[in-house]
Image 1: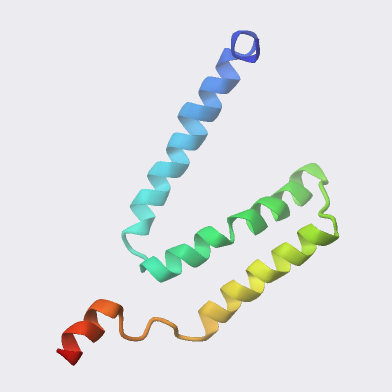
Image 2: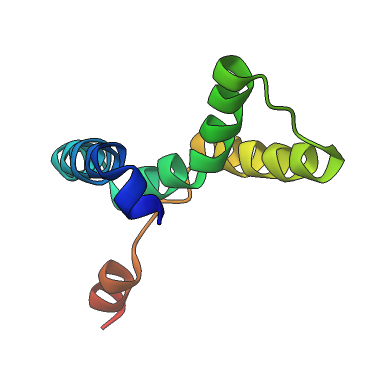
Length: 96
């Protein structure tokens, strides 16, 4: 139905935007620590909501705003506080 009616937009969405985003993500992720990458990826719903508001005029409800706020607070806390101390592997080597 939709696939038959709109094959070119589906090819564009799957082949161009998804593949390009995945390619750029995998290239850039090599230069970022795992902790930093997890914070960036956790912020993805917040970026999506912001762009949906700017480009489409979408709005978040009360629970959406609470969720976005919790994600931003968690990301900011992770950025401000250094939780990346000694990793579990390093601690095991140092204690043995």
